[in-house]
Structure formats: C-alpha cells, structure tokens
Image (cartoon, rainbow, N blue to C red; front, side):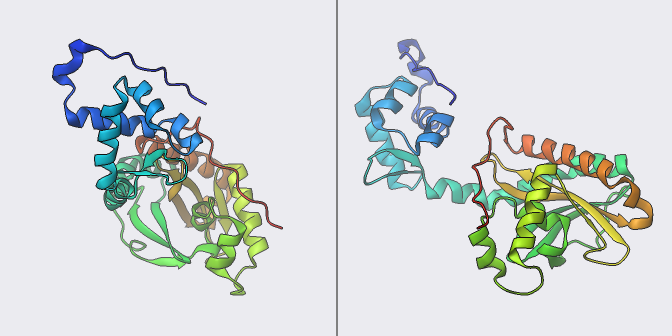
Length: 269
C-alpha cells in the first residue's frame, strides 16, 4: 500500500487555497491507493491527508456528497468517490480514448505495415471505433462494424475482467463457444499479454489484440492487428508483443500505472 504522509497546514498557502483547490485535494486523497484499498476514508484521516481542520473537511465533504461527487457509506460513515464524478468521466472517456489512441496506432501500423483497429465491447460483440492503415492515414472497412466477441482476439482481451458468472450471463448457453472454453482462451490471452486467433472468425484471416486499461486498471478497449494469414501468420507473436507495447502506451496516457495490479479474478468451477 502506498503511504501518503499527512500534510502539515501551511498558513502562507491560504491565498491560493481556494475552495476548488481544496476540493481537488480531497478528491485526490479519495483516489489514493490507501482509499481504494480501504474502500473509503473517514473525515479524521482525510483531514490528516489534506492538512485541514476536521470541521472544514466535514463541511466540504457534505457539499460534495450533496452533488454526487463523493458518497458516504451509511454503515462505516467513510467517504469514497461518487457516481456523478464517474458519470462525467464516462461521458468523455470514449472521445478521449480515440484521440489518445490514434497517434499510437499510426506508429503501430507503420511498424508492422498492417492496419490497426481500436475496439470496444458492446454486449456480445466487438465494435471497431477506429481503423488506421499502415499504408495510408485511415481505412473505413471495419469502423462501426460489430463482430462476435468469442471469435476474435479483441473479444478475448476485452473480456479479461469478466468473471465466469458474468460470462454465463452475457453468453449463456448460446452454443457458439462454451463458456469453459471461452474462459480458457481469455486466461491464456491474459497470461501471454495479448490474444491471438488464426482463421477463427474468417478463413485466411489472423489477428492479435492487446488490452487498453483506464486509470482504474479496467480494460476499456483493445488494440488489434488483423491481416491475411499469408502475410502475418508466421509473425503473429512478434505482432502480438508489438501490439501489447502499443496498448501499454495508450494505457499510460489514460492514467494507468502498471504497478497497480488488477483484482484477482474468480476461478471457473
């Protein structure tokens, strides 16, 4: 656990310590490793971390809670980041994702001389948000097109955070790919750091994908390289490692710190 030393109040800092700055200090404390691991922090600890009086912190937290920016656990009385803050982030995250990923995708496509795709999960399908060609700035054949998640390398990395129960709820007994088999290929992709498929979605087509994580460590997108087997088939692992490195760069730009390990997933019974 990362320790945040208590901040000593500095009277000389009062002129710049306006309400917004003080609220941001509280939000940063609630976003710390300590707060995330504990599930929230109380007024006393927050006052220590931001170097303010408990009564001031309590008033500020009540005002933030009234707007949904933070929320208070009714049992522990501890505070955590609230629904409205995450809603605001969610509304802008997809646009930011595309803007952040595009320059990295240009570099990836140039390195591999293949088209790269930025993909997200939509229910049971993988949707392509953006495609970038290694030979021109943009190609549009895949953008907006959904394909079955279980047949693609992108789907396998996009489902990395799912539990077995969630897989059953999402895919049930569709018969396309049994959940135990899907779980196995998801785990294999997680261990390798990228997913790979060979002619599972379309004859003659191969591909690799790597996960893009947001500041919380959640998989929010996948970078994908797809190409004819005749051109990419004998260098899938090289392409996978290169794509994984590119996805890690996008994740870092979104605020992901690799030292934060995602929570352990449930085992398939």
